[in-house]
Image (cartoon, rainbow, N blue to C red; front, side):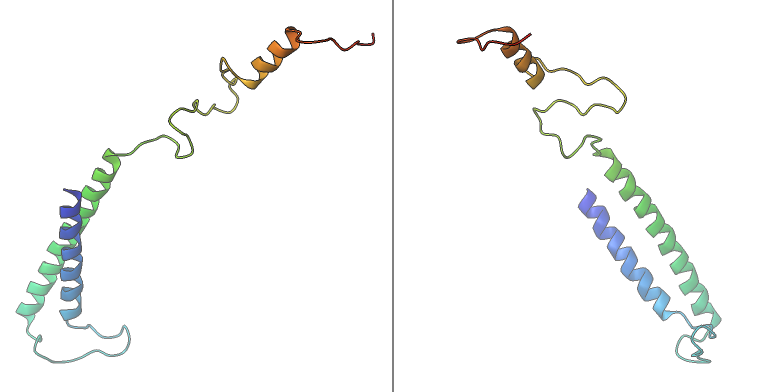
Length: 122
């Protein structure tokens, strides 16, 4: 569905660009205003103006629809987390301790003597 809406959106963009280029120049912008041509009647100008306005409204609607569809599949998680890693802590809150964390392992090694003991001075 997303691909279909993107294709429709691009077709609207191309049609709107074409209609804008077909419209008669009012002059003054670049100093190249034209006074005549095959699109010189007022009726044709009204049709082109209304068509451009309709295409602009369709462009606006498809843009909003695409942004809404993009928000549906939004995942607020971090891309740096792996599936098995613990969640990232919020600054200012105490860090959660994992049962097999490095500090727990060091405390266990410190408490449980293994092998010969080194004399300690007091």
